[in-house]
Length: 308
Image (cartoon, rainbow, N blue to C red; front, side, top):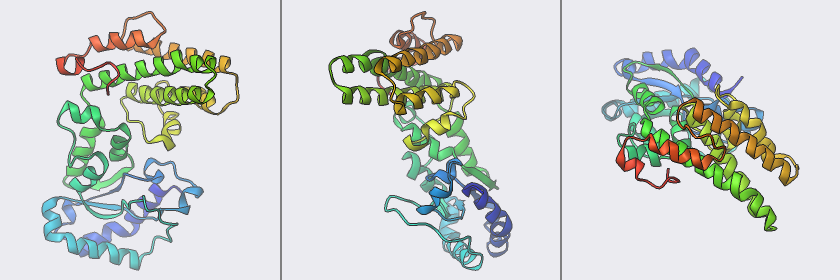
């Protein structure tokens, strides 16, 4: 059983009634669930994941006002729940690990993950917040949310990126793929710099993964889960396999260059199919400038094509 399912079962079996009985005044205004850091929040955990920073539990998300009035009461209730119905032992703790369990202010949860106490309000906040931060803010599951405050912010993050920002990011990824994969990968090999070629290949893969997530209107998680998460996407998710080949297979540079060309051709075709570009060029830099023309905001359109 995956960690997210365990957490939900623990909440439904013990946690929900426990808080309803011990915190009846505030219970209807609480949100419960699991989201944020950790492979279990993405649904990607396995037996290996349990060797560090893992324990069964759930979050109790509360408003600032309720935290001031009921914070101690909720902390005590959660601690007593764990003592009475121990969900199991945790693995080793990492200094970089942070628990997503127990009572937490709604604003603090989002502040911890995206640097803002609520959904972004400006295009700058949308453009410059890392995609993996947004992914952590909207992963996992909300088990129940009486007032809907937590879920409303979550939905706005998941669905609210301005189209101009998405287009700017897609243009930036197109240029990055062109520069790192279509242009520099083989040039680095011809210069006798295999290490630089490997770095160019890594940049190409990262840019391509982000591109595919953006085309799906989703956020790419941090590096550890990028390719695995990409395989679940309905649009171009199958490109995760050739991208993994580029990184892992000992094929010749020429074979990898041919695969890069094929991947870029598929991306270019999708950009045209989505009416984001009308260029017939397989070199993705040409598509980037076509995409830039579709950005309505003069401030965003004036940014360097690679920015974002």
